[in-house]
Image (cartoon, rainbow, N blue to C red; front, side, top):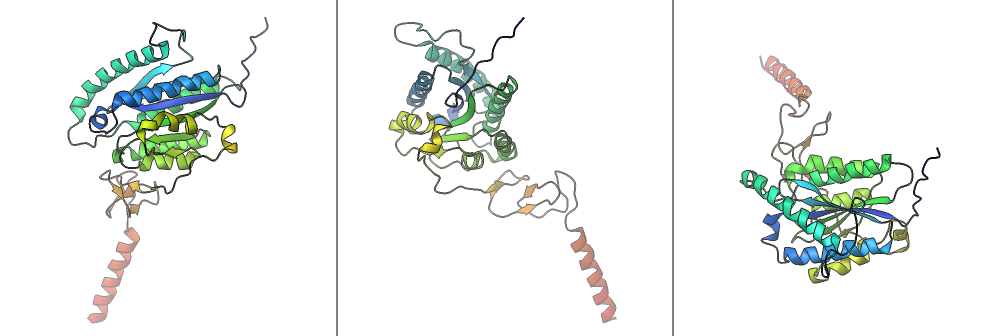
Length: 296
């Protein structure tokens, strides 16, 4: 029995994995309302599906203490209209988003004390890369994947190691990470992610025109980007976070064995157990003995 021929994809077919920030701690203090943000994002995702019938969209909700898939266009049963006012894309997304927010709120009540109100970016990046790796293993013919981070929450220094591991994994898999940051200050994590993976980082100046930013910059497939003049970052914040206190630092100490970063000098690496400054302490002890011997 002959096998079913695999679906052939052109170079303009895209798989967009969108990481949507739904952190309530950020949106309650943001100048741009969450409902307006969702209306712009939903319109953008719908327009991306209309550009090519083979395009795929996966949406991952990034909460305060959890993340999960809330929409997958390839698994959707139909894109028909549920009622006269709301397409199936919007209704499925809103229903799954409401259920996710209820679960994330229960988890966030126990962990919100004494922590920065950051979203679980490391977890959503890992989920996106896992989905893309399953796509790669499905066969040689697949749409070109890319990740789009739609975030506004501040960076969580305690996620530095996990986020950087995800960034380097995306770089090795040749998956660009695009970033659209709607917060008050730039995100060092997303700047580094877009810079290292060859993606685009944009911080819209006028959030009322967010849909225009999204369609103009992020709706373009990877093949067509070489013909366009996309925004370039004015500067990238490459500062790291220390492993001991999870704080962003300008200068620090690095373990030569495992490359762990510390803000203060330590006698022993807490990650790999290597002893620091043993040769220097031996040399200082020997010099002290020689000095005392010369004095006597």
